[in-house]
Image (cartoon, rainbow over all chains, first blue to last red):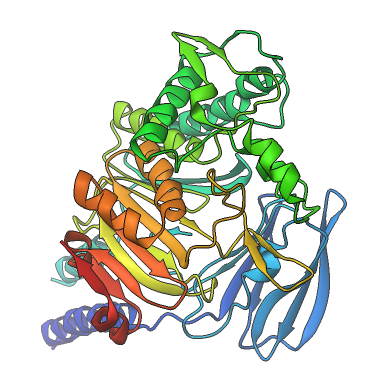
Amino acid sequence: MKKTFWIITAIAVIFGAALLGCLNIFRKPRVNNVYIRSGGELIYTIDLSEAEDCEFDITYNGGVNTIEIKDHMIHVKEADCPDGICIKTGWIGGEKSTAPIVCLPNRLVIEPSNETSDGRTR
Amino acid sequence: MKKSALLFCISLVTLLCGCGKRSEYAQKDLFAMDTYMTMTAYGENAEAALDKVCAEITRLESLFSVTDINSDIGRINSSCGQPVNISDDTADVISRSVKLCGQTGGALDITVYPLVREWGFTTGKYAVPEENRINELLGLTGCFNISISGNEVTIPENCQLDLGSVAKGFTGDKAADILRNEGISSAILNLGGNVCTIGEKTDGTPWRVAVTDPFSPSETICTLYVRDRSVITSGNYQRYFISEDGKKYCHIIDPETGYPVDNGLAAVTVIGDSGTYCDGLSTALFVMGEEKAISFWKEHRDFEMLIICEDGRIIITESLSENTEFTVDTLRQKAEVIN
């Protein structure tokens, strides 16, 4: 009886582990989370699927970026940096969007969690 | 019996957990060379190796910075025509840039800095200069103005150098050397869009390098699979301004005309063994335009190339095509493969 119990337990553990492995392999990358870093420090982790529409400022060494979240997507709406590359990069949050938004002068990085590549050339 | 069954279960769980364990690795990121850099290295010595890489990047930045008057480049630019003694690394980059300038018929030119400034790309105060002013500044440019002998360099008064088109590629090469010397055989460096790969991933598969879609910069147009290669792009979609008359001007200046490049190309990606060569070439090929870039590749064939045109056409070299996954299948069908 005890032997049967342990055999069943062992089989359950094997199948459980295999199931977890499969779920991990087939999980589709989604831009649910975005990580916002300012001056190299992680300051926000935002779950876009839960986020309400809003606007907020991030300030670093006097430089300001205005971030907008709308319809579960995020972008830099306004910035006082000279080149405005962060604004031009556009929105993160769609199925295809994977590139980070970077504002060099204000040391701001907004990274999506679904980057499936190891590197990015631009 | 009970004990042995318990031990069996513990061993099994430990084994399964062990299967999912990743190799030892380290990650670093830093803002340097006017860009954001991220680095990942695998191996026992990864943390210490990346610390050395960060120190090297900071050192090279202090030599190459065009805005630091005490850097090698800063001292050359304020030398008023007098010879300047510079470091081995700066001398090496300048020599290689001058060589590549010759190879590309002047398409790569590290002396266009006065024009880049005049257009406002260094300050953000963008303006379309008067034609007379452009012609005046064009008279100060040209790599033939650079006289270099050993560690001594001389340029005419008012001529100015900027290594922006080659410095990150060179830095990637130096960083890769450090990592290999430290025994790292698997690493990837993202130096602000310039990607340098060392070896392959720890699972034996190639690195996946995404190419940003120039028409939608938050998206990926294709993914390249590479091992031990540098992947570097020049494009018109990141740094540009729109003038009052609605015309778009990108930050890459054509050394022949003094105007921002406007030849129908949106981006050029170059893949090769040397980061310095790839970096310089991506700018040069972007300046050359479609026809000359293809001719240059056919003549040299020591790199791979992906060209994305403003009209959406894609031109890709054959070997690269075999290692590229397009985000949308129709793009592969549309791509023109050259061999």
